[in-house]
Image (tube, rainbow, N blue to C red; front, side, top):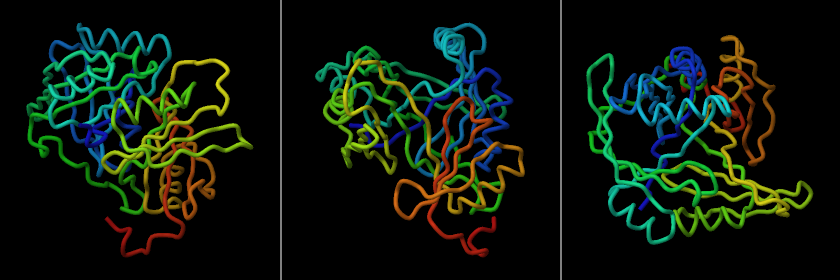
Length: 294
């Protein structure tokens, strides 16, 4: 029923500033600059190889904008939702109803690109946050051709640009409950369930459409607190080149270090990430010069 991670939604206060910072972070221009008539929001979208990133801000009157404004007031900028692609929103709603996710919808949506005038249409199904441990999850059926949202091509050397999403992180207060949600109710494939006794942490990896949803939480549940989003890890061909590019652009970035996954090198981006904890992850070794040119 869920075939991919369609996009990640990030709430921001200043859309223009957030868009500039994200273009610099990814090394790619935005794919879409739009508005949602009647919803009270404006957005920009970056379409990457395996998902898209949406920056969303209140704009005018509307129920969605009011909700985003309330979120910004209470907790600030950051990740607010994961949207999973489904080929059939009505069937998704029925399946979610059957497993106790209390869905709302399908609800048809429309977005207009404010520069080109292009229109995108979709149908969303929202799981009840009370049934998803407090995080917003929804299914989306796209009803417009994929090329209406073009892939954003690199503006920098390909080796130094973000290419795709590696994983999105959910921090769980009760990993057993979260495993039931993502594996049994949402139907995502569980690829890893591993406990780290020394750290007191248990980690689950769920795969969908070439992306991993990582769920991490304590081995011992003392308080069954709600889940919340914990950040994004972006794939780069050359971690050292990506770090050097960001440092030159004025970002605060950690030194490159060995990743938790063998054969990887990572660095953490500490600034200009719209409140999203951000990791860059790439393979060991540098990309040959011929492969890193635009």
